[in-house]
Length: 252
Image (cartoon, rainbow, N blue to C red; front, side, top):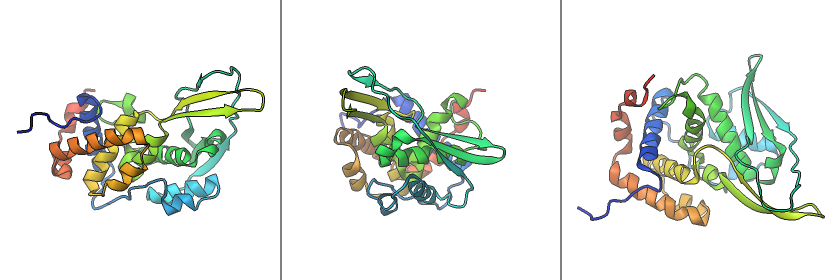
């Protein structure tokens, strides 16, 4: 037996929750023989999109939801520099999903247009709200619905895009002021998202070299740790998920 067991880049309880969430998603979405694509930033469907609506249609198709009726709306959200120091925007919503008078509506911030990869990740997250609209509560209850929606987007193959866009740090200038802007998006941490991506790759037997190369450099080591931990703990991940008792995660 090896002296040191491979450990994921997240706490054990969070790792176990991700496993439970994957098991729950397979149950409520009845994945059967579905083998979603591993969607990387250079995917032709994404790089060929020239407008936000075209990118939305590409993401919707990759999610297998091309025929799900939905209205897309842009919300203007111009950045006001203000203090010329580092600014923390926090985890404000990059997009929203709602059902209005029986119609599904996804809105996105115009500020997202400067980062198409992050916008694609936002579209994937909001479409997963639509996908899970009748799914009931995720493991550990309704308070983790947003986290499970991030997990669902990774379950559909968008984990790399979500991980890369979960945290941004960039310089800005408006001609008079300049500084740095930090922002976060989504609900799962970068490390949880790369772990979910490792689970996705193991479940669907995708090659992980492309995913690792497409991640931000500082996330690649975390991804390798997650991949090794999943491989050691669950040689047959599909079978392991099928054996998981989800009733242990719901205490209502």
